[in-house]
Image 1 (cartoon, rainbow, N blue to C red):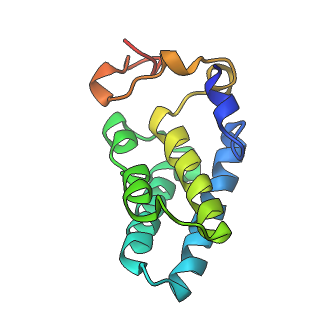
Image 2: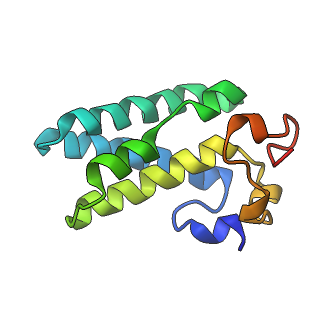
Image 3: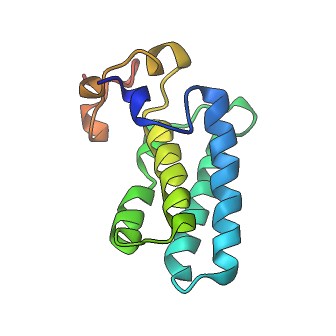
Length: 132
């Protein structure tokens, strides 16, 4: 299965930046009224770091790309959520982190199979960002 087909919000690098901005805004909105504010605040901090690492055309380093733990937090803290707002927020946050982690150029991102992607940083080819 193509990796891109798993994503609803991100189909290109430009989409990534829109999704990142959206995820940050949704996080801020949820934080205003959330009962689980520690987890949401942690996700927000990580999203803001992703923004810092990608601002103004900056290419994130391999260490930066593999550092966020957004998916783990979302799975642990919101796995049983039934609130549509939380589910939509989690979806865009997970896609944003996934795209950031692999940081593929558009041509590769739009054609790569999910089986070609590393699960851990040490499995990644430093040039292609695919399985070594």
